[in-house]
Image 1: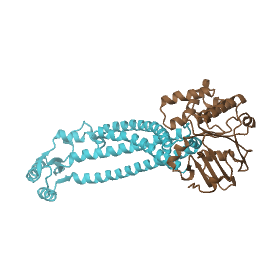
Image 2: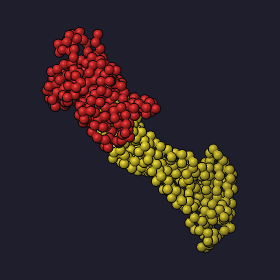
Image 3: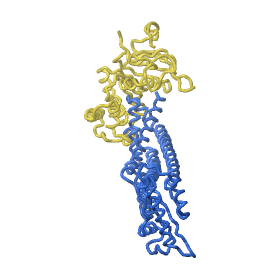
Image 4: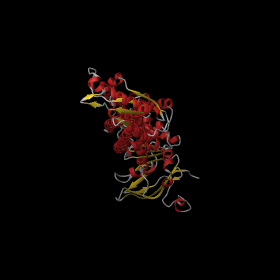
Length: 240
Length: 291
C-alpha cells in the first residue's frame, strides 16, 4: 500500500473575510516523491505550501500530514511534526543579527542537538552549498544567492522527511541553481519528499520531475499516480 | 539568542531600575522603622519614670523639701509589688539626657529640673498602675507617673500605619513592574513576530521561545535591578549618617542590621524573578493564540 506524506481532500483556504485563495484542492504525495509546483503569480502556490509546512490551517476540507489530520493535532505535538519538514522561504527569512552558521544551526539548536554536533554538521553543509568562505558572515553582507544558500542549508540541516521550497533558485545563476537542485535530488534519493514551487521552466526542463499546477486556486495538474477521482479519497477513508 | 535587540532592550532596564530604587527605599524605610520600634520597645517596656517637680517657696527652689518628697516617693515605689528597683537619675545621667538639646556648657543647678526616678519592673509582673498613681498623689501633688507603654502604643500605631502605607506602595510597585514587563514583552513579541513564526516553523516548542524571552528579560531586568539597587545604597548610607549625627534623638535608633541588609538585597533579586516569570507567562499566553 502506498504511503503518503500528505493528503489534501477538498481543501479551501481564505485569509480573513477575503475570497478563497485555494478551492477544493485534493491531492496526495507519496513518500519519497519529487514534484514541482507551478502556476502563475497569485495562483495560490505559496498558500498551498504554507498548508504543507503548517503555517496555516485550512478553512475547509482536510489536510493530512504524516498520517495525521492537521486540525486534530495537539498543539504540543506540532513542533515534532514541523521538525520533519524543511522549508525554504521565498524571502529567505534569515535572522540578520546571526551569522550564516547560527542561522543554519537554528533547527538543530531548537531540537536540542549537542553543540559539538552542530559545530561539525553546520560548517560541512555550508561548505557544500558554497559558503565555506562566509561561515561567520551575517545576512546583510551576503548576496541574494548566498542568502538563499543559507536558507536552503537551514531547511535541510535536520534531514527533513518533507522539503518544501518556494522559488529556491530565484536569486541564483544557472550554475548555482543546478548545484542546489542536485542537493535536493540527493536528499530525495535518501527518502525526503520534495515539493518545489517555481516559475523557472528551464529548471523543470533540466530536471524532468513531475509537476503539480495551480490555476486560480485550483489544482489543474495532479501529482503523478493520482487522479481527482481516486477511490481512496472518495470512499472508505476516514480522515478524522 | 535568536532575538535581535529592540527598543524594549533600553526601556525595560530603565523601568526596572526605577522600580527597584523605589521598592528598595520603601523596604529600607520599613525595616528601619520596625528596627527602631523594636529597640524602643525592648528598652522601655519593662520600666516607668516618675518625676518629682521641685518645690518652690518665695520664688526659690526648696531643695531640702524636694529631696524629702523624692525620698518618700522612692520609699513608696520600692514597697510596691512588681517593682524591681527605683533609682533617682544622677546629675551626670541628667546631663547626658539634656546634652543633645543644650550641649555641654550648662549647669544643672541653674535649671528647674524635676527629679527623675527610673523604675525597673520585675519581668512579667503585673503592677497596679492606678493604685500606684493614687498612692503617689496622696503623698505629694508634685509627683507624676510616666507610663511608657501608652506613649509606645501610640508610636506603634503610627509605625503600623506607615508599614501599611509602605506595603501598599510595594504592592503598587510590584503591580506596575508586572504591567510594564507585560507591555514591553507584548511590544517585543509584535516586533519579533516573524522570528517567532520562524522558530515555530523550525520546530520550537512554546516553552523554548518563552525561555528565550525569559532569559532575555532576566538579563535586561538584572542590569536595571543592579543599577537601581546601586542607587539605593548611597541614599541609605546618607540617611544613616544623618541619623548618627542626631545623637540621642529617635533616628539614631534606626540601625540597619545584617538581617535587614539580607532582606533589602532580596529586592533586586525578586524584581528579576518577577520580571522573568511575567515575561515567560506573557509569551506563553501570546503563543497559545498562534498556530
